[in-house]
Image 1 (cartoon, rainbow, N blue to C red):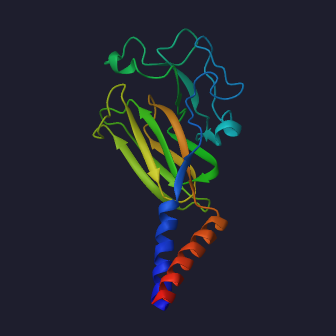
Image 2: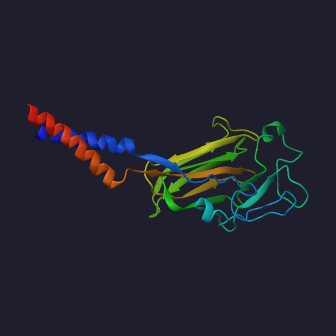
Length: 221
């Protein structure tokens, strides 16, 4: 019987691990209408981005000394243009969104209002000697994961986007700090994923079911 109980414990542990899944928060696209009251236009001036996506997406943005700003593909008079007529490879920029985020200094911080297990997003236009390092921190300021993207990263290049992916498997990421030579790069499609586990009551029923089946087998012996 003791060996059976041991096997049940191992089986239950495996089932709990398998049952953990990831639930995505809404993706921050920075497009008009992507958050309540967020309606930038292509003819407006630069807009500081900080807490506009807090209530709807569970994320805020900040930078050292200055908040990041909204940028516009191509751009028009009175806007911050991203890849204007002088781009080296304008064909790559055709598929970009209209609005994106740009750091207003050499740092960008993505703050998750509730801890997440995974942080994803795209950085655009990493080329030549440029680089960006993404570092995930927990609430105690411990480093959880880090990823550096440079011109050697597959998919990097003029006007191209590369995805960062910081994954710890449990909900402990409260912020991601981006450092490097960030001028001239855009960020888009930022999202956090939360790990979810079965409710305790569901696990209890599962355990009782496994135990009952095993006990029945034991009695038959």
